[in-house]
Length: 307
Image (cartoon, rainbow, N blue to C red; front, side, top):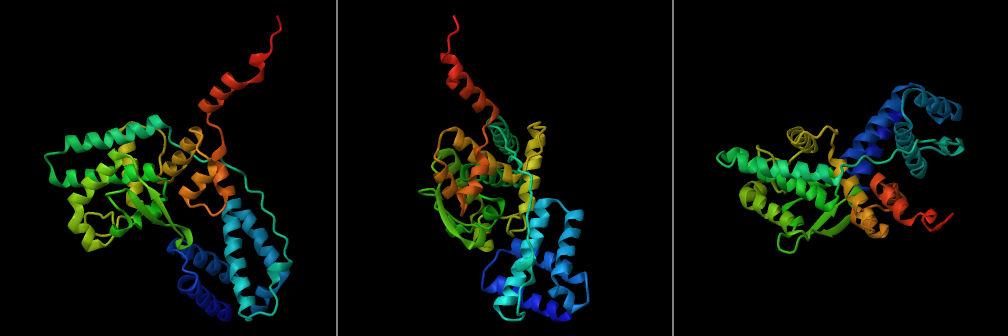
């Protein structure tokens, strides 16, 4: 087992320094591979097709399809690397037929009224706390974060990783490093959003330069993803929004609302940074209101006369 454990460390180094995988993916790989190697101390078992098949069966008993799919993908990638580097002569995973029946769930979104209520609450907090320096600073940052999340559709991890040089407050151009460090650009064209970002930048200029990251916390460190989650939860509660909101729901809402405005899905794919349009197609579900409008205006029964 120690043989494979040592190789797993080499593999994770390869993923980090040669493949440049992001920290979240690396953490998942490490968890999945460590869990797998902990099951047995016999090296031969890790090369045995039946043993691997039984392990997959056990995963199905313990986890949801999405988690199983990720865990197996992590282990399979490890074995592919072992074979490529000739640490093993044959990849036993190549003989295992793996099929997943992952239930398709529609992305959870925030409707436009909910987003409006959330933003209004944040702006009201800024006005209410204008006599408090600390609270005013926090509100300016929170407004900038919320506005940018909705204006760009970027992932919360991408937002928290933004650096000062990644955004131009003159033309609204934003450089985003997505999954696999893939670079893409979007443009923020709404003047209210740009004003919120400029106000934040003016107030936090020195802190931003010290931190190097665009969004910082009160300790002048990079704003964490968890802090953004708490931020959204706080304003949702103040706005009396009953729905449980998450940062990723801004991304879902961004895509869904653009589709409802008949924006070509290929443009949305590019903006979101999806490598495959199949990923973007999950947003092609039709909202209840849009469905009602379509059926009311476009249904062929409207052209059928029985009198």
